[in-house]
Length: 79
Image (cartoon, rainbow, N blue to C red; front, side, top):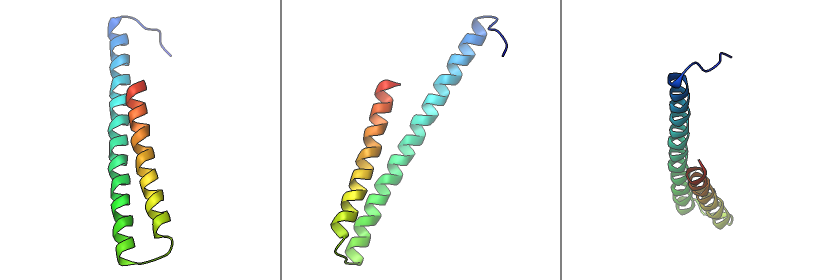
């Protein structure tokens, strides 16, 4: 690893860190969209295919979505 030679090296490293953080947050929003779509698909599946475990499936999908949402909020607040 080379030593830092000037302000340009520090700024470029900080910029890289910011870009990585923004990319990570963007990917988390994509995952929230996926979790939301999963929740909708479970709801549609339960309407078309009746099963005694339907409330369990809906609850799991909802908690999955809420968990993803909470993780994104925590990540934004603490990054």
